[in-house]
Amino acid sequence: MADYQTIIYEKVEDKIFRITLNRPEKINALSPQLLAEFEDATQAFDNDPEASVLIIRGAGRGFCAGYDLASDYGNAGAGRRYTVSRDFIDCLRVTQRWQRLWSLSKPTIAQVHGYCLAGANELVGHCDVVFASEDATFGHPAGRQLGVLPTMALWPVLMGPRKAKEYFFTGDSMTAQEALEWHLVNRVYPREKLEEETLAYARRVALVSPELLVLHKAAVNRYLEVTGFRAAQQSGGDIDVIFHNTEAVKAWVRNQRKMGLKGALAERDRAFKKK
Image (cartoon, rainbow, N blue to C red):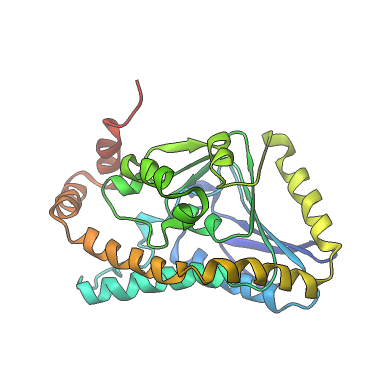
């Protein structure tokens, strides 16, 4: 296995491999390094003839808090002058990254506990199966001021346009039970049972020939792809570029420079806290 710094990639047992997002001090926020290592490991898994199924989980108190805004995850490099065309290219690359996860030939299982926010939903949305703990929460609070999710995290596909709009409009989070009811996750377990149950399901998947798993996945993915969801996701990225150029976002960026990231985020979310 490669010597990764921000993830752990390991063989759990015969045919079952696992990636652990390993920045627990940052709730596994998606930094450029983590994203690069994650993609390298997923490609290694897909190319390994001994691998049948991949589990993806997070270390520490949550699955993932989303993109690491403090480290600049790639939507305008540090010191690089912002342009609309540059932003378009960056959003295109974000979409292509998650579509590559979707396009892995073999099954992927997301094991989600605690926070699953913003860009983490793009990761989870492009896995094949999602198991969550009872304490998991899913949401896109960044939609209040920072942008749309370029891929929409497949929410309109998975839970339908009405529920997708309900949560995107406010940036509110949903519980694991709500996510289960609206088809964002497959199953919900007590926190202490999540890993055990995820591994038990992966073992059942691994009993099936890898050749057949590939064909099962291809059949379902092809069904969705003929509906044009890839083009729809590209449109989401285009709209994200427009979002970044609104006066509301420009005003928030100016406020962030004055208050700092934490202060600006706290001010953004204050009015949305439920009393």
